[in-house]
Length: 191
Image 1 (cartoon, rainbow, N blue to C red):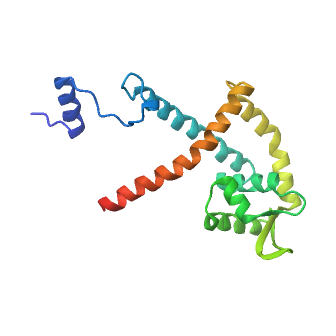
Image 2: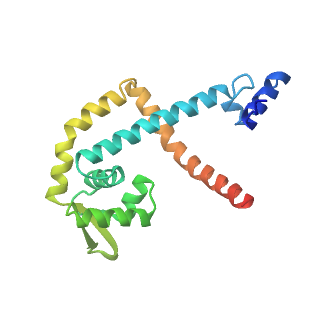
Image 3: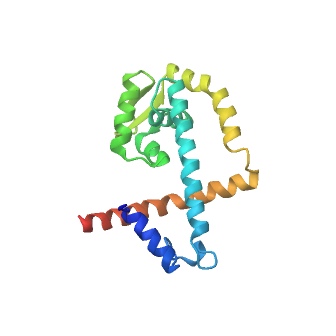
């Protein structure tokens, strides 16, 4: 006698009863003709694309001898520092990272002499970050690779598409934060 796994039994029962799998969303905007199939396809495509973006970030970091996260921190400081440097909190907000995580990463970048940390002369409680000449050199040397890879990564987007997707992602991040809170609350209640 062959023993079937619970998932196989469930799928078999659904097939026998010709029932539909339960919906994974209930908002009308995410359903097509009462089905969540398009939503699930969208979500799987988003996950696949996100995985590729993360792989590229990791590769960019590896090319300059850093982790993917440290690469993101370094390039963000480079683009945000201006003349005076950029506050730790501003980099954390830009990258949607917690201050504790960013502090650990910037301490490592400072130890590697890629950035300098200094107190803000106008507010001693704030720490400003700036790239060292070595940090600037790493970013500048990587730029031709970034251009080639990013042009390919977003080849399918027109200017209008890019502006729309950029706006949508900015609006989705707070939704993601709230969804994380919801799932954590549910998990806490069940444990």
